[in-house]
Image (cartoon, rainbow, N blue to C red; front, side, top):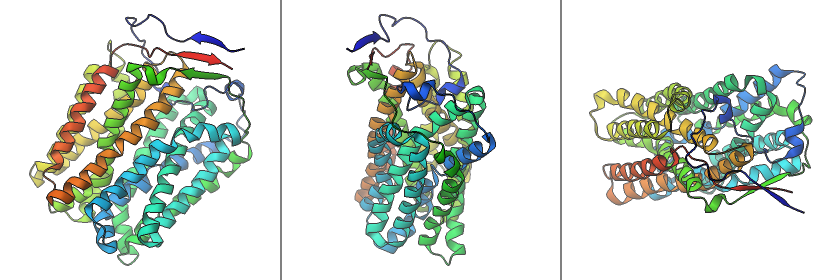
Length: 431
């Protein structure tokens, strides 16, 4: 017999208490009673920490390494701007489409074993897109994007489970590793391609190495993983909840701007007169700045009665940085890039914060996270594709500002709804 336990009732006007920063690490297996009741004893925590850092470092290079070389890849393979736009769209689309697959794989094989296998899949995707022409480029991009989507859902839960007493500091380590991986890849891919004889194939393929190193370091954890878990709870009703959709739309729309930056900002800057190396370094610097606001914004946003003002501020910072990089004089580009980084670090961390603040317990948070990532990233993929289409039709970058404005305005509207001090109205079923 199934019993239903309501997780939220008529509490719409009850203020949400601030949540500690460690709760940003959402466990994808929060509905799994066996996993939640287990408390593993870490024999070598330093080895787990090293593995976690290296895995996290590999969750962005496959995405940010393409942007500085996109013009060279396009000219080398004869890609149109529309195809280049598809190339920037596919990995983001895969983040959304494959995110819901992660908990199912984890219940069957265990999170640790799944991460090991998917790291090898990620390395294979990077190799495939580097060495096998246009077909390999697109197929490898799909494989890499799907791999990142699955690992990105599972890794935070392992961090939260195995470092429960240090979850706050581990959240900072996790965020730092994500930003560092993205920044290093954005800034060093062009120099690496020059080292290997001006070959974009080697510049992109280099990032297969760190993925393999991460897999080797993760191997001890995979040997201890357990599968065949029994699901204890199911959360229903999220897709009928207006607030859940506002959280999801905010996640998707701010992510759309983020992946436009990952995929297209260097090309936009090159079109304005920068060299590929200068454009890559500017993207790298902007990403590094995100670390400041991604750590500070959640803490500041939970000091007030709700998060609407914080959302408005970080979205306006993001739009200001984007418009500055697109239209402002070249002499001030670094200032606009810093502004952009501060805004986007805040928008991303707030998206994660909202998932926690709008949920009454870990079961709702895990399922809302799955919805926000699955639907949100699928929606986000349309932004990079629209930029490619606009450039292909107009032959320039000026019209892209309209895309920035529409997505940003929609993100503000969704964020103002999601930022209210409310809970999603859903129920959990114990099975």
